[in-house]
Image (cartoon, rainbow, N blue to C red; front, side):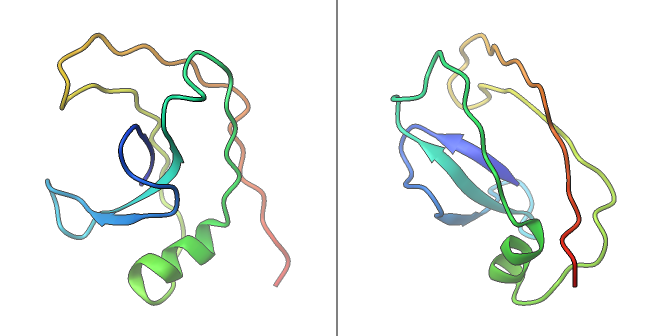
Amino acid sequence: MYFWSDQVEVDKRISSAHTSPVKLLVVASGASGLGSRQSARRNVAEDCRRAYGAGRGPVLGVAVMTDTFNTGEKPVGEYTGIRFECAGN
């Protein structure tokens, strides 16, 4: 799971507090990008190897979420241009 954090440094890997098999990876951090368009480019296969020690098989789904579960504030998010590209083996 990729996420933005206002408190945790970029590339930090964290186990989910809600379900231990889920690993979280910070892709942006701090307040500098708030209110402006941001982009992230990730090698999902490499991130899975780093998080789990091996490949996890095919991607079965993608979820995009905006939440403020921990702060109780009103969430706002806009998403565009999400795409996956296969790299040659």
